[in-house]
Length: 481
Image (cartoon, rainbow, N blue to C red; front, side, top):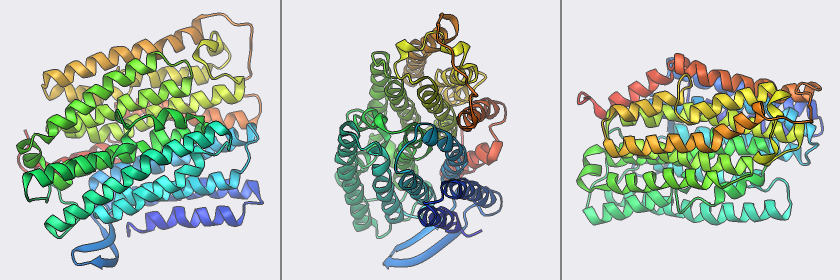
């Protein structure tokens, strides 16, 4: 199957959402159908079309605007498309139960955001990547500012204030790369060459261009964006935006620079220091945050920088950890955000100190949250354990120490929510399945929680481990050790 088909589906779905915006049931059904169809198309490519290409047109000598379904990109595309299905279903219950305004705009922008995510995942080169990376910023901005309150508008302005200059940095790095090499095509093992100081500068520009990964100090847009509806938070944290940020780092390190050049210029050390600092500081900041979604935002910063840390190790197990943590974290973190949204929609509560006894009436919601929390801490039997264990297998002592400290801190700020929800008393009682709209929210979060466990048992689900291994062999060749 042509990789471009994977982008045509969400584009068509988004246009139909606009066309039938006056018919809510049809509009919402189109969103779900587009999500399912996109996932099936990408799954088909993962089965029958790995490394298939689609060139739309030529931009300049050595630059095609096109797509390539390589193993690394397909891991990201499968993660995004599969989660889109569940978020689409969840959104119906959430948006309607809270009687949210501008729902047609919401679903349109969500669909176009997914198109952008697929474009990032399947981009053949840096130019195509940049175009969709910027489109993702454009289409997620209305979602961040969806509430149209002063807080939402402020969050939207901050979102753009960070990500527009970041995009400019990515473009500058891309153009300098083309100036040096005459190409921007991704190549396993890297392709950039030239003066070491220029190459270092370009790497810094690429790093600044990955601000969507929310490492410190380019992070404050992420907690601020938590004023958005819960499905948007899920999109930002689990499905597309922040994953695009760490995905660009994986691409740059292994498909533009390569292992040898990264080591020669000590760029991996710079990357590792940034990642380790963010992992620890994000967890410390999370401990002091009482708003659940903002606490989860800092948790996301920690988990993203764990991926960057694994990348910086330049080790086969570190590579596998970074690639496989994209879907693993996606399912675990989306579970937590869907739970946060359900608690808000059903109980009207946002603050973790208000959750005492809620687990006794919101059993499935807090049960799912427990699974997500276990996964964040890297404990079995949830998929997050696999990623952290792979880092342990690298034998890098300082990275292992960072992971262990982070896991302890994860327990400190996530497990008390579970304890208070289940073991403290409350006079309040809520009907978790009170009406069909609640079911639209509860069923998806149960599914994501269960899949977080299934991926621990079967990491080959949706070809994830197979694709990660294929990508590993592309990058390391016969030098695996």
